[in-house]
Image 1: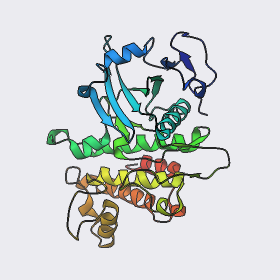
Image 2 (image 1 turned 90 degrees about the horizontal axis):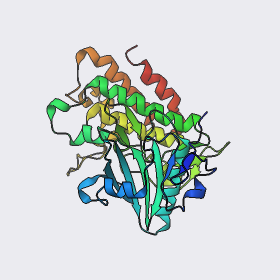
Image 3 (image 1 turned 90 degrees about the vertical axis):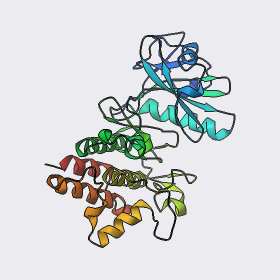
Length: 328
């Protein structure tokens, strides 16, 4: 069973606070008891990010920026700053605190603490030394740093286990709603950590879905979301299937290109499969005749996740089991 991490107040270290929601209006830094960032203050965060200097930006989202914080003791953290007064920012802040305070797992980015500072909401996370999977697949230009097949398989397995925890173990269950390669962060050992719960929604007992505005990222959004506005765990599985294709092909879900032959990654892969040319979708950097069976096994798992009918998609538990079975 999952357990919500108990927050501790900055000025009352050691005393339990019964509800994280009660502290969302606090201007003091609230740290969780399992936090790696003990005894920090808001002032420490400002100093560690040079007052949120542009030079310290390491990422961005729909409602704010992520900064790298370097502390005097050598430790690091990632600080997400949500700025502004609109209701959507407040909802994102509350959703992220609520979800991450419940979700404690080795393959999920750990929330260390949170606070308000003026009109800003600050979320303190563990720092992931190797950045995002998106960077390693699509931005890294150093050929010597290309992710090898074994590392990609390890990342797929870890991310799937993090998502399975949200869907099956965490109480209430959580629909992530924005699974993508830029939301899979990698630590110094390239262990995968699923991140960015700003769009997540909690599933109460007996719920099968949550009604929502259309959310997610182009190229990862399940086809059914555009019609029903109902987010489900099977929708997350679809998005994860797109990530598996990225790992296999090193291509973006939607390539920046022109012309009538340009199509999204999912359509292209299914067309290549239909033409019995599935070998051609595998990135040349990881193609290895000795690993042919393993590569095609992952491709088959990805295609099952991407079934147009969500009822035919596997559960994330099934995906974990299938990925663990690769190479066995």
